[in-house]
Length: 200
Image 1 (spheres, rainbow, N blue to C red):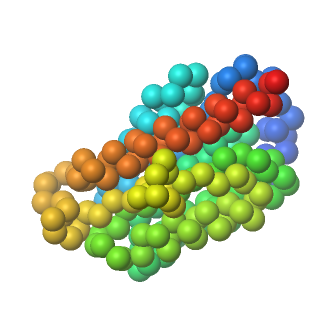
Image 2 (spheres, rainbow, N blue to C red; image 1 turned 30 degrees about the vertical axis):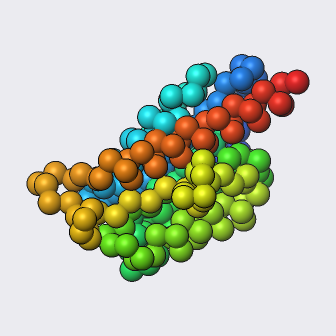
Image 3 (tube, rainbow, N blue to C red; image 1 turned 135 degrees about the vertical axis):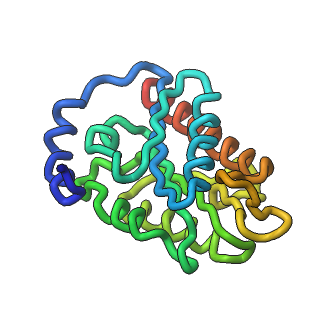
């Protein structure tokens, strides 16, 4: 079994093997998430759908423990999602962010964040900013949502009325799913513009 510690050692090799020219205008978006109850997975799918809505997008939506070094090399943009745990990033996502390659290969990739939380004012923006702050360490280019109403990315409330999830299977209010979709679309649009400008 490959752990994140051993994955870090494979990134340099993967970078050499996978360094192929990118098609003009193409953009590759990786959505990486951890989901304890299914809510963050639902948001991740919406972020992925939003990214796919932009022409030319290739999108991978993966749990953080399934992300490979090849996925990171492949991606032009990395969108990270986590549930809010005691107003902090969940443990698996902390491990994932701390294990990104520190060899410069993440530099100038686009970074964005989304979260799910049990209640309003439960730490959503603090956790989004924590993810974005970690991405800055890797010299990534940060992107928020398309308007001031989701400046730090996208978030969803799932455990407090009127947004409380009362179904047997995980569900999220459509307004929050729309924010996830909008974040994915904006990330892909920005990635497309950057790809086009680099081809000029």
